[in-house]
Image (tube, rainbow, N blue to C red; front, side):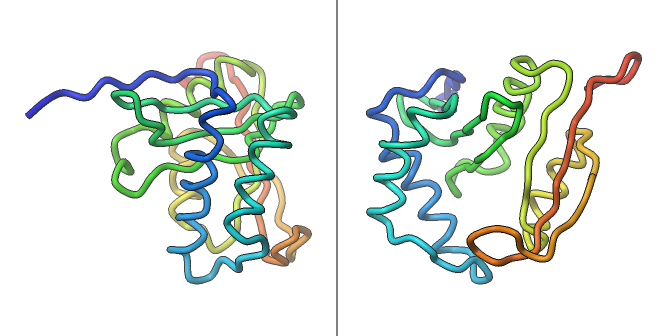
Amino acid sequence: MMSRTCIIRDADKADMPACSAILNGWIDETGWMPRVHDHEDVERYYSDVVYRERQVKVADVDGKVCAFMALSDDAYVTALYVRPDYRRERLGKSLIDHAKALFPDQLNLWTFDQNKDAQRFYRRENFLELKRTGGDNEENLPDILFQWRHREGVAS
């Protein structure tokens, strides 16, 4: 069995179709998630807006984008998605650790109330729940604001 090499790197604009395909795949496989934008709109949005306005990081495994994360300048993780065939390989952890290094004081993110796997992951990564909404997002789904803060003497 060959060992795989993963690097976390800045995304190139050429990576945006792969990033949007990961997100589109997650939406398609998630029964409770409504499709608000078609595949082409998501790809266009990632190429035209997310790439320009966010820090986009990818987990590149042997030359293939297998996970990605988008970060806003105000320390919000605005997207973190992993291809299904690479889940449970710690790519999400590698990306979130990278985000913690970029924003060492605190990091924020929203996740949907129904996304229990994400909530377990973020809680394992020492994120705490700050508040809930009834669906103040374009999907109209209840969501949760999480925050990680660097705490002296506590391993992050």
